[in-house]
Each structure stands twice: as structure tokens, then as C-alpha cells.
Length: 220
Image 1 (cartoon, rainbow, N blue to C red):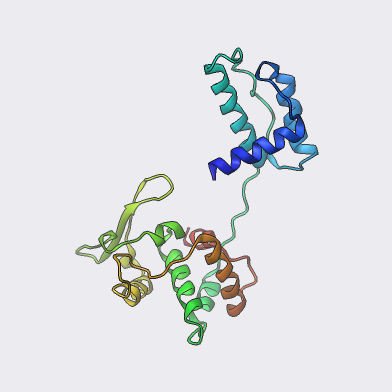
Image 2: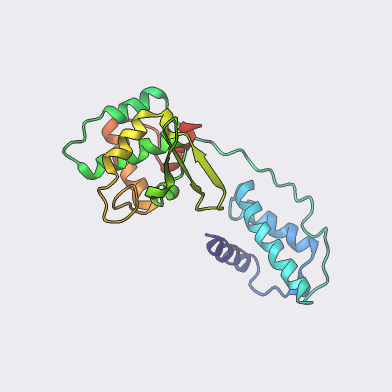
């Protein structure tokens, strides 16, 4: 994803001016590029900041390579207001509607439902669920906990999953059903999972835009 952001930044920069030399980068050029992203590309603060941060990184690398003289104020005070993202979460009734929906005739969607509910109970991201193995499930004197490292940043986590009996039921339903050490069988990509969540929302009568992140927000 980082590479993709750099590629998109380059596309925007080439639209703004395809023939910029490093020594031509000035404060005025940076301000004009920010205005271009605002007016021509209609990008909000968070998106503009993302691309200008990549611009800043490239600028620093160019300075290290002595292609320009570094100015620490080049990207200072660009007045980029980053809006707080709108986080969608489910109510208890909506989670119950998903849990209680009869999906016996659609086993594929049934597993999607179980994995989504497990994310609601555990607060995990879907990528972390996909990588859960038997050794991540540890039995303590209080019950099972899940421990491991985030796939995104390697931060360690410990989840007292024993507090959610429904989550333990889901684990027991799927564990030992795979030919490998993973807890959940035949997991799919984030994109395909989100597509199936749309079908799940329709089946359960949920009007909100259901994605794997909604489960984490609901947990919170």
C-alpha cells in the first residue's frame, strides 16, 4: 500500500507539472501543489497530507543525495485540516440480527458471518484473524486467551476471549477442521471478505455499509 501511495503521488505530481527538477522545488511550488490537490483533485485534508508526506520524504532523500539544499520549513504550516474519520459500528440488536440469521443453506456465507462475529468479540482485524494458529490460543486458569502480534506493526496483543462464550463456540466449531495449524479454514482476501459482508448485511437486514473494520469499531 505504501508503494501504491507513492505511485499515486507521482501521478498527481505529473499532472501538476511533469517536468520538475529537484533544484526547482521551492516553498511556492509546494504551496501551489497543495492548492492543486485541493482545487483540481478535490482531495480532503487526510488525502492531501498523505501525498505531501511522501513529497517530504522524497525531498529529504534528494537533499541527502545533495541534489538540492534542504530547507526545513519547506513543508511547514500548509494549513491542512485533517477531518476525523466517520467510524461505523453496529448496535447490540444489529449484531444479534446477524448472529441469529439462518444461513444453513449458505455455508460459505455462514463462515463469513462467524468470522465477522469473532472480530466483533475479539477486536481483531481480519488480517490478524486469518493468521491465527493453534499456538495463539492459550488456556489459562480463567479460560482461553488469544495472544500474538499484529500483522500491521508487530505490536503484541493479549485478548481475554474467555469473556465471550460465543467466540469460544466459534473457535471450537472451526478448529481442527483445517489441514494446517490455522484456526479458521479457507480464509479469503480482505476484498473478497468485504464483498461477502455486503451479502451478509442484505441477508440480515442491515442497512449500514458492512466491512471488516466495522467489527472492530463495534467491539470498541
